[in-house]
Length: 538
Image 1: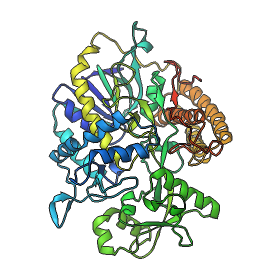
Image 2: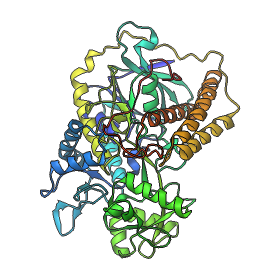
Image 3: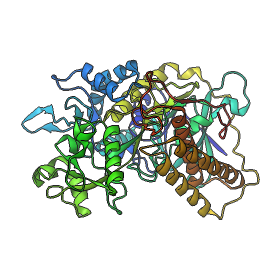
Image 4: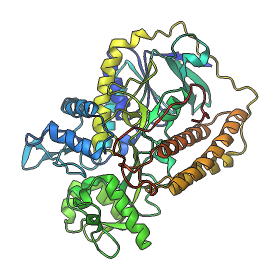
């Protein structure tokens, strides 16, 4: 087995991972591992933008209050304040990297700020309607030009390596990670004093999602198997407006469209969201998604409509060029008629417990971006706060790591050779595909927008059985990319269910019909399992 050495190992090539890499390259050698092409990350598909206080009429206080209100009592004010206040400096850094945020045509010195649900003011900076793509392309160009950064594409992380797993005494610390090189099929290890999880989200655990295929919860699953606590995994944000079309492959229609006046109407033309919240279509996503779900179930409709037909084609082509042209591709002209939409799994507000500097419970292991639970989002994420968090926390993590990375020496540690034992190549890929589809169907049917104790118990029984099947399969056959992702997906599914079963209330993104009211005290749901026990129970 090949073992490579680096000073800083970053797993993931989205906004968080690339930002951290650029900040750390002046300190030493950086290796960024990407499970597919480096530009294939959740960040790339972010349409809306970056929420940040840049308007003199706005204030940090208002942004903090909007975030706390949307977070349903689970956001931690100190984390919210640190991230919100760190925004302007990161916007300046992104612009230095070549990101162009739109300016107002009539006043080029001012940003063209978008309005999104839950925000009391316009404060979302954007690059057209492809902000994430602009971020990735600009940062990736800088990374590829940096001689201190190595970019390893098609490397799929299997497990981080804690010293407790390899029999070393003392407090367990992370010394690297095992990878599958998807091109060669070989297993290799990377040894590093610092490993940063920037692995993104887990939307593929659901049958319908706005996330790309890479979002299989790898970082959360690896951290849990290493013994780290995870929390609030039940807080899954369902984006209210994905295009309803069999060939659209979960195309997201940005919340910014509603910010520019789009209405949500049912198939009879009624603007129904006001029945649920006085803010109508600009209510936070938890309320809006539940409102859509309720109307669809009550009326037996497969979708609702998003209507911005009061805006002309010229305006829509300028403000939302990608969304407008994509809708046209599927036969929908937003300027002429309403567009059919449905909710889909979009973002995980929970994750690996970490502070705003990325520190986790294990020395040498850090978590930033969507994989981390920093205390910013709480029970529900305020729109466009995700890119803000990824950028600010990545920069803070790099600063933290720069001061402490030499406290975790790894030069004298040998990462054990990956043992295949008597495992053989599998000729039953259909088993993996079947379990993959069943995990996602179970989660959509029983652990979706509206839950119940009975559905959660049924889901947990089935996911447990699937995880046992996966464990046997994992031992008997040589690992493949599909098997690794399935293993992680099933682990994440169980974590979501376990956290949901802990919460005997409805709060934020978690709604349980058997516990419809919020408790008087807001508490995190936390799962802690012993290290080395990937199938352990409470």
